[in-house]
Image (cartoon, rainbow, N blue to C red; front, side):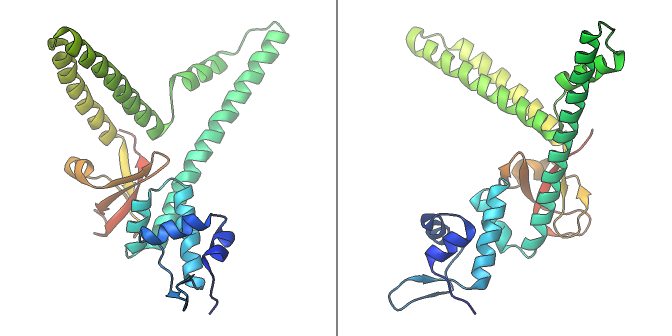
Length: 243
């Protein structure tokens, strides 16, 4: 079996030596052995594991999620699901861009020929401008509200300190909590999960949605749940669900 130094591992996976060492300290990738001089030595299985870690990191998973995924019973089944979901999102984006390009071409030709723009093209443009795709829209609404709410509350805290007026802060805070609860409920209604073990898509309970570990970015998010189809407990890929 081949043996590789930290530097060789870094070269093979196009990462820095510090990254490989950092993964060791985080418990993601321990060396298979140490040399007499105390140098880390890795084997072929370690190299394959590092490549998997780099792939999961590249599609948006956090290091904690990667660690839990590698420790699960089916680490090799989570990755294809994440890649399938990423492929679907990219395909949707490509389709949207193609529709936009087609609409622009029709408008350009119509303007040049001084003709009327087809009604269906106008409809397509309005829909593309008004609607975002899937979970990106849901995430955008929540993040936008959270940022706005935070800035408003910060300003009202300053007002409270400087003038002693605390009522506006309390009112905005309470309203923000109520709206936040509604947004969380909306988020829950638009999410489903694909099991890494059986591949089935299922809906979680609201309690599980709130308290289960959520990891990764919006483009590749996983949640640790128990599949209602097969009973497997592990990280499942979050997907968009129509209400």
